[in-house]
Each structure stands twice: as C-alpha cells, then as structure tokens.
Length: 210
Image (cartoon, rainbow, N blue to C red):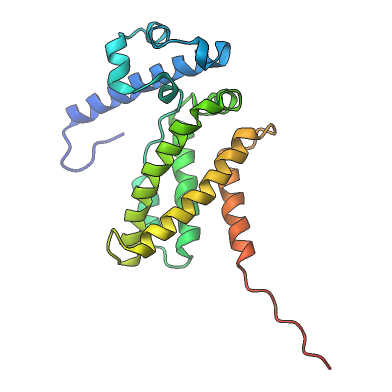
C-alpha cells in the first residue's frame, strides 16, 4: 500500500512491520487460547509461540486477553469520504455502511479474525476488551458524525447518534459471538441496523371508515 501524502516511505515500512508483528502475536494468542483456554495460557507462552520477548509482547498488548482480539484498522479513506459526503441516505444508514466496510477491511487484513469468533464463543472473558474497543470507536464515530452534520465535535447530537450506533453494533457483535451458522459479522451488522430502521418506519395510515 502506498504511503499517504507527506508520509516518508520508510515510515510506511516501519508501520507495516509493526502491524505484521502485531498480527503474528495475536494469531499465536488465539491459537493457544483455542487449544487450551485463556486461563491456562500465559503471556510467556504466547511470546515464545510468536518468537518475541515478553517485553516486546507488552509493547503491543496490555494483556493476553487483549492480544486475542484481531487488529481492526480504520475504515478506508474512500469509505470515510462516502460517509461524509453521501447525503442520499440517512446518517444511521451511512454509519451502518461505514462499519460494514471497516469489518470487511479487518477480515481481509487479519487471518485471525474468523478464528477469534471460535475462541470468543468459548472465552466470554474477552468481552471487557471488546467493549473497551467499542468505547474508543464510539468517540471516533461521534467525530465523524459531527463532520458530516456540520456540528461541534462534542455536540449532543453527534454523541447521541454515535452512542446509538454502538448500541446497535453491540447487539450485532453479541449475536455473532453466539452464532453457530457461520454468518459473517458484516451480515449481523446489516441485520441489526435494518431491524432498527424497520422498527421506526412510519406505518401506512389505516383506511378511513366508510
């Protein structure tokens, strides 16, 4: 992937190496936890499996549970630009599309993404880390919503829309966690947002009595 304007190629290569090593550590953690369970695995064992030092492990992750969660990069620049500029759909629909793109991007870039689903079904203890990530995502979404709507970053409107979208996302993530059908998280996200849209659609007015 080419560097963004103003970014030196060397900096891009360094970031690529960091991302690759982070993925290696995460994959090792997921493999061990699937095999033995979170409580039976130590940070030292994950570090050895990833061929890194304990110190390097903690440079990337604060805990073994955090290491089990695949890296979720930001949505691509084009997806963000579409969210900001496409006024043909509601902000909530645009947010659903943006999240769909972000999850799809994460799946393409992380081989551990789908294995994480299998691990999480057995290890609900990582839910705390997942919710911490969602809290960070909520702040990022509030900023984007404010830009789209021309409001202040800390406006109540932007904060409320972002909070609502994260609540919907939590439902999708939890349904995906317990799903045994193999459904992709992207599909669960679309399903959850469509359920909300359907519930607030104005019903047809009843026929007037004759």
